[in-house]
Each structure stands twice: as structure tokens, then as C-alpha cells.
Image (cartoon, rainbow, N blue to C red; front, side, top):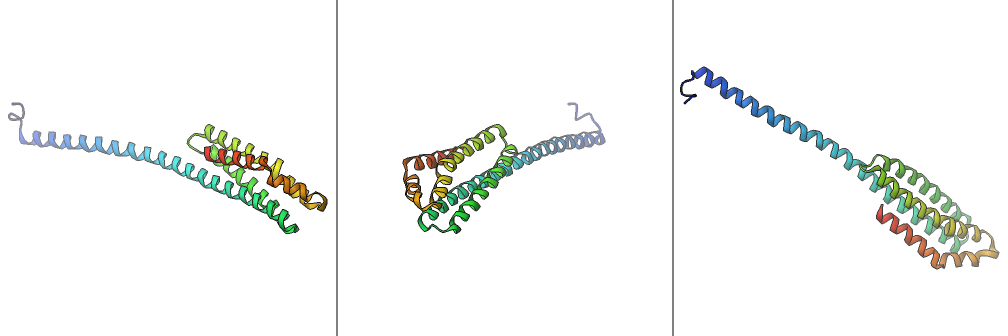
Length: 168
């Protein structure tokens, strides 16, 4: 046998070299895994940021809806100002969501989903939210504002927003 004919010093050297090779291979595998884990962590952080942004967008949209309807019911300018503040918050939050979509693991899909969400939101605001507030300001057109709020189109556009939010 080849090992039987070797001197003890050579056997110890060979054993030590084998241990070093094993430790180097295991260390390399750990290093590669740690690098991959760091990349996965960054992707997870970006995805979490998108989820938080989407929750804030939804909250701002529902705040817009509630303040617009509150203005129809109460007819105080304070509620119209609350609607304006909710609209501003929605726009700011949507802008932040667009930025975070670019940093997400799949920026093309995330950006497309946010664009679809923005289109749905703009449709509701253009056809329902803003008209409700502007029609309520004039006592002669309050009934028209109530019709807009009660309309099937209002529910349809809000559902379109919910669907876009669900798919984002």
C-alpha cells in the first residue's frame, strides 16, 4: 500500500493538506451562499417597500373616497380641503411607489402594475372624485353630486382600482 510505505511526516502533511482543502471548499461554499443571501435580502427589502407603498396608496384612495362623500353629506369646506389633502397624499404616495417599483426584483412588471393602478386611480378621480367635490360646492348641483356618488360607474371604477391593486 502506498500509505504504508510513506514516512509519518509525509502522512501528516498529506492529512493536513486534505483538511485545508476541505476547509477551503466549505469556506468557498459558505461565501457564495452568503453573497446570494445578500442579494435575496436586498430583493426582499425592495419587495417589502413596494407592499408598504401599495398599502399606503390604497389607504390614500379610500381616504379620498370617504372625504369626497363626507363633503357631499356635510357640505363644509373643511371636507373639501380634506379631499384635496387626501388627493395630494395619494399623488405623493403613488410617486414613491413608482420609485420603489424601479428598485424591485422585477422592475418591468412592477412598473407596469403601478402604471395600471395609476390609470385606474386617475379614472376614478377624473370621473367620480373631482366631480363630486366640484358639484357639491354649488348648492344647485348637489343632487347631481349625489347621483355621481351613487352611480354604478362609481362602483365600477372603484372595483377597477381594487383589481389593479390586487394584481400589483
